[in-house]
Image (cartoon, rainbow, N blue to C red; front, side):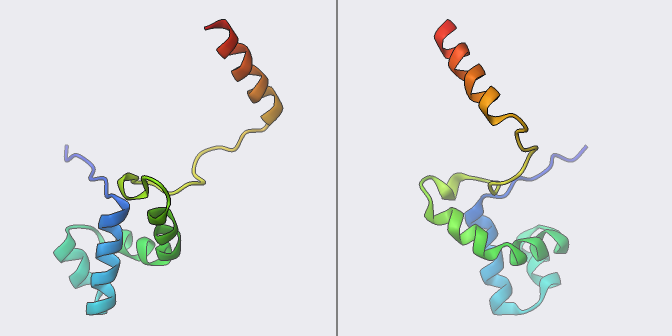
Length: 88
């Protein structure tokens, strides 16, 4: 099996900038070694990627915020965390 590649936010923004220069998704994707669908999503999320890059340690991150399942019981989670910390 081929190992799945993870892209840093800096790498994604470099690919988007190259697309802005070339105006060809296919050529840009081929030169950067990604798929055109990945590049298309990065172009759509350009503003979010720029905001994440400005945050502390944003350049080293590989994913945007907001993914994953949201908590249903936030209060319970906070209480559980407090209890867990007190037991350690």
